[in-house]
Length: 83
Image (cartoon, rainbow, N blue to C red; front, side, top):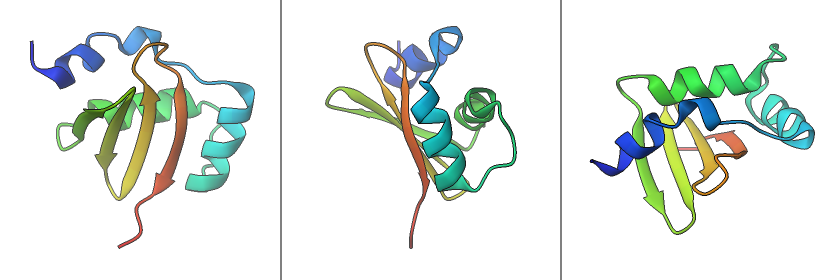
């Protein structure tokens, strides 16, 4: 199984904390309260570049980088990639 397929096969486990919701909304300037669903949609995007580094998954798409813990599947943060 390709590494990114491991993350994609565990989409149902992806979640975040209340603090995570606030942090992601602020960092990405989002209007939605369902930041987990927003992040899942980004992770599932066919253009999303997914890689694992240390204990985290990193998902990059549409100038956004999402960080997900590889053990708990907690979305730690998401931010706009500065070029």
